[in-house]
Length: 402
Image (tube, rainbow, N blue to C red):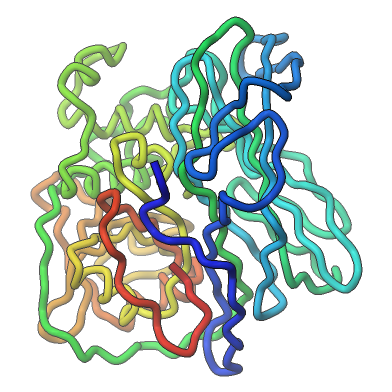
């Protein structure tokens, strides 16, 4: 299998001084260096060069015997000094396998250490997927899903990614990595509202309420407000015809609730260190197990979001702040689905913060929405789309951000 989107050698596009600084790059799996790993996409464990060891799952079994191999990308240059990095991956991890994603940055003649972005498995019977706490150094730290440069640390202008593939000793299964990428950015004041010059459009996205799941599966953070992310991810999967099968849902342990695809998504996006299901790249990685592609990035405006909606790709957006019409009035972090725009350019959403599924479809004023999206999360979105589907063209003259 080859990546659905060609991966050229990164070419730096000069960063305009008046545009938000954000860039997204897929690592070229045909380059880089490896040991115990073969392939150019997907990457899989090789027949030789494997390392043996013992893995201690901090939330489960200790001393899991394994063999592993790793791949490290070439250094990826960035057209501006960046402060934050969010990694994304599309991978398959059959039972008895898992992967770990890391990043390293450099600038002004120095290299940072490697930071762990996540240890990932699509299941939870072998190891528990988790981000890693306690990585702070003079250069920066990882806050759940985001590397952040430390205040006062020297500028960073390039990075590289490393993935380690693990297989339980005695297993014949191998994990595979189809895509590895990162979005880098630096804070910037956005122009709000962005102009609307398109046509009204409203994609068909099934409506699911997080509030209808309040109190379900406390071991996965208990539904309600805690499940905005997996509920939004489940809605996009439903729109793309890629939800869990009836057989998978029937085998799901525990009580049977309405809309079980939401409970399923919460379990299989759950980050055991974060103790929640809102880890951004974990949600995208969950979606890709159903034959989809996906990544996390930042968009610069709703005008950019409109490019995806026009190609029938709904987006999961992260917001933070006061939003008129929002169920709780204010949020310290919430996710919802952008499904379209009305004739005024206002945002048609499927907002899981609704008493029932019948209340999920909601329209927010364009400027109000951009203030809590661009001003709240810096324009974070999950881009989840059918494997092989072409994406809209990037904005000319700006560093690519998808």
